[in-house]
Length: 221
Length: 221
DNA sequence: CGTAAAATCACTGTTTTCAGGGATGCTGTT
DNA sequence: AACAGCATCCCTGAAAACAGTGATTTTACG
Image 1 (spheres, rainbow over the protein chains, first blue to last red):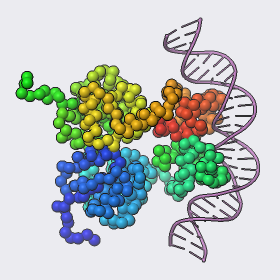
Image 2 (cartoon, chains in turn purple, brown, red, orange; image 1 turned 180 degrees about the vertical axis):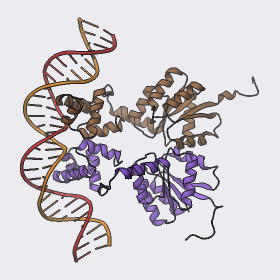
Image 3 (cartoon, rainbow over the protein chains, first blue to last red; image 1 turned 90 degrees about the vertical axis):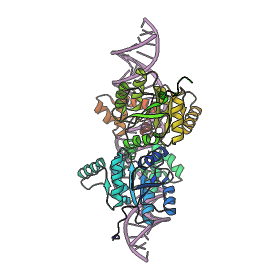
Image 4 (cartoon, rainbow over the protein chains, first blue to last red; image 1 turned 135 degrees about the horizontal axis):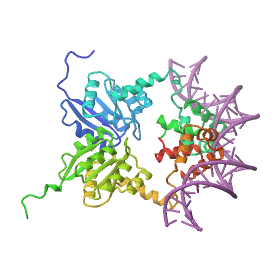
């Protein structure tokens, strides 16, 4: 339970994590004249976001998903583990089912697209701060149509193992099974097994579709 | 001095074209306090940028490459055809050789990444306004290393024919040569020839790399 | 400690891709 | 008329991918 005393007069301390500095600067400039919201820091990758939150109090992290060093998903997971009261507002340019559900599964309380306007951004921050969940309009639609289409199938085989990921990337750059075997110091047979599992997990019937689906699900790119 | 006031027309009239409204707002906020630069308008796609430039005088267009309706390349081409004195500053998050060279070939006088800071952005705008060309530091590096690696080959085979494009897309979604032949009502041999030419043009050694490279060059996706 | 998931390896046989030639007709341009 | 580019078609042989099974070892976790 929260205290009976609401701290409405207090500023919401916001940390922006995005690898595009221009975007950070823009957001900061955009939020300066919003009363009740204060951008207290910025981070160019997940690791920096973690470091910052260790050092200073933060209410909400606006978290980009695609970042170098440590991406937004991993950063969110770790952040929420150590800072229970922290809120994370997922931010991405991709209105993609996998993106959104990954972020929400990880514990983010909100998800907005980069084409969101100032108004909705502020609304999202306020909603999260008061304990709610915010999804942009387009995002909600995507999630809904996604649920409609999916008769509960094909949910199990979502994540790839470490090894599968490595094989996938190697396939994508054009290596043959034999070459991959040599690169990873394993048998050709093993690579074929991984390839087989990849085809199944990504519902592809050959390498071409495999790479294509991997791009669509942002497993590579 | 001729007049007590310098011509305020010294202001650089900037139009921002980007499909992410949040980014536009951010940029605008970021440039408001820069003397000599004035953001006079915004466009969410290439078509809007064209329309705006027809209606009002613009010095520089900050042009995102990936936009719906009409992308930055096409918009730049058309803009420069009708407005000779206009400058275009290419903007993208991709530090990719093909992106950069496409944009420059189209006639853009500058190219910066979305992780550019305010300082460099202003510098870029001023450089372009005074007739120069501006490339960000990372961008220059990419271009240089690209030239180093490329002993002048592989420039000719840039564009795909209509048929090749169709075959490429069909390959990407997982169809086999035989299936594509049936879909396009042509012989299997013909499809194989197209596939062969695609592999050559995209410098790939198999379908996996083909799809991968096609994504990188934005031929599909 | 048991179990499940991941990673490893193996074999067989069919299908597909890939490399390498060569050939024709139809465009539009010079 | 000559030329380049595109689309179409054909053939062969080697290499790789794919389908279908089965099995062992390692690792992670409750």
